[in-house]
Length: 310
Image (tube, rainbow, N blue to C red; front, side, top):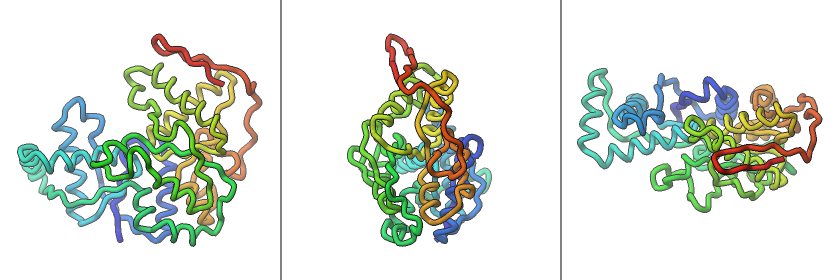
């Protein structure tokens, strides 16, 4: 099976390690990728100019349809954006007619036949957890992982088709396939604060700080995120704490990076050192964390709320 890899806008600019690690494990698993020159998924325009959003998503889908390719997304926001557009176009004939007319100007046609799925869904359903387990030469036994599912993949679940929004298990099953222990924790299904960043940065920062506190309480070794927005939020929070001389979390990882390690790939092929903060126990070459006051508190003020976090 060949897939069209949809990177979105954030990953090439802010999280290239996501693309690097994803391509590495897909190659290792013999899943073929085709090059398609996609544009933005349209998400930033959805609440500003709805028709521009729909047209942007539909154009991407039409490009994949022209090559008869299913789409793999890495960004969970892009997954939600493309799947929502498919839903809107299936239910609104006038909107579909507008899109068809616009796309026809450049020789494209939207048919609504392209399947859009996240990388983790493809790994779970197409490759299969049993096969992944069989291929995992370097079992990650003893690695405790706390994972954040990502809002845009889970809700609305009837449209995204990723997993049960209230009781998902897909990522935990993928982690167990490579021997890692999926740690239950309070922040698993919660928001990272990314959508608030432009409108209310104080509340956005306070939100991700709360996730880091919940992570610290979980006892996990690393935080697994597979949404570039969450990855950027964690980086922001980590750098904020570091600038204040406070300790943050021991490391953030993407699932394809963990899978790559389990498949025997070198950390440098997975760009683990490009994560912020890099997972010290997994890179094999990272220096120990800077000394800090373990019980020091950082104050984050947002509106009428004040959060005190270690």
